[in-house]
Length: 262
Image (tube, rainbow, N blue to C red; front, side, top):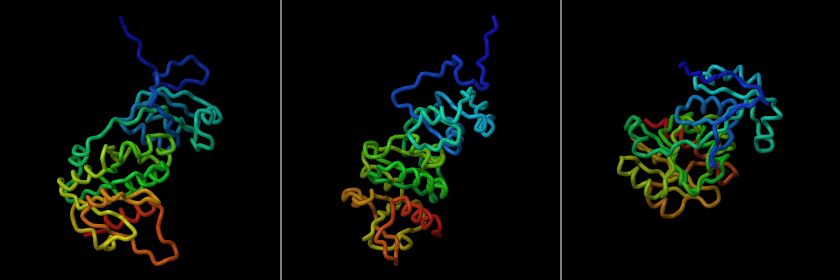
């Protein structure tokens, strides 16, 4: 007896579609860049897709490749599923968080001698981390390492701020940042603590080879034990009237400086 193939064409809002059941950790990811990256990431499980007619034109082919039948919806209907003021550009995906990654496996997939990673010590603002992920994607970082209990959970806000980079850059969650830095040291990484009172400038602190730049939360900065696990501390020279930079701006400058080293 022949079996019926699952249809993957668009479903109009209001029909009795049966979306896959969501879990307690599911979240709505929205915006064209974020949605396109999520759909292109085979590790990302997507439960449901809401799209406008215009977004269907933009994303139709990749939805078909993923075997996802989107629900066609009006912009206002999508807005009601999201936080107030969310700019969804006509698409929202109900997603599961990405499966956890192992640091050693992630580093094994990058070329030794050219690996650059960022370590975030209790950076809890999703907008800041999202911007850091976006810069990490732009400068080809091998990973961004966060602490599981002191980092923003995967969310639509984080994904939107990252503009797709949440599904591009490996985000490794660890229990203990200090121990992760010790592990990076065993893998041959030169560990640089970025701090306003650093012992040298970032350019002087960056030797050839693999490097890890460690960034602390705004206001608090790096914790003592985390800083002690680094090989050197470095600062970004500033000659203006501001004493410090937003952590995401500092991260972008650091990634650029470390990428241009010989």
